[in-house]
Amino acid sequence: MNKIGTQTIETERLILRRFTVDDAEDMYENWAHDPEVTKFLTWAPHTGVEMTRALLTDWVSRYEDGGYFNWVMVLKENGRAIGNISVVKLKENTDSADMGYCMSKAYWGQGLMPEALKAVMNFLFDEVGLNRIAACHDVNNPKSGRVMEKAGMKQEGLFRAAGRNNQGICDEIWRAMLRSDR
Image (cartoon, rainbow, N blue to C red; front, top):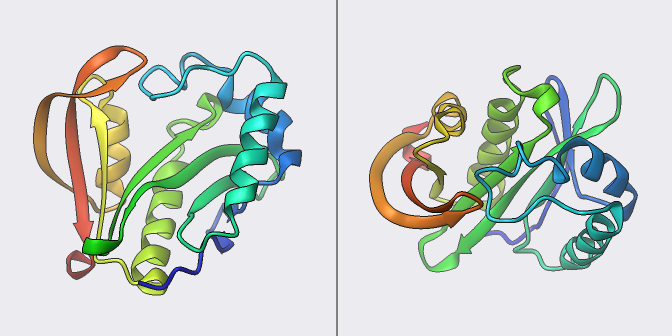
């Protein structure tokens, strides 16, 4: 595994880059405060931009660790930060990672999240050397599962009452891709 950390990735419509504290206003306004965006996430909506700024200060300090992978999604067309995609759990003993993501609802349904996920997965397979990338979603959030499918992940299983999010304890559907699946 090459612990090269978060590197800039460019797709057709997005620039995926490291967060800066200056992203706080966009992050707060576009997705972090929105209860609809955070409905199936594990963190509560932010109550103010100060909360977002404090979180970003912490995240920025982690970029020195080559095993920290956390991107802000910037829309090329307007330069605005519209979402986040990250490795939420890196498993060095199996060369694998679990992913998480969220995005402003103003951009839902446009194929941007699958575009970002696919690009990040390619980076993690090709540059970092991972063998497996997985993600899960609440059974009541099938649109997140569709993002994973569009990025090439295959469903592996349903884990009953295995997760907790802002809706409480939930059933999780896990999907994954192996490097050899590509």
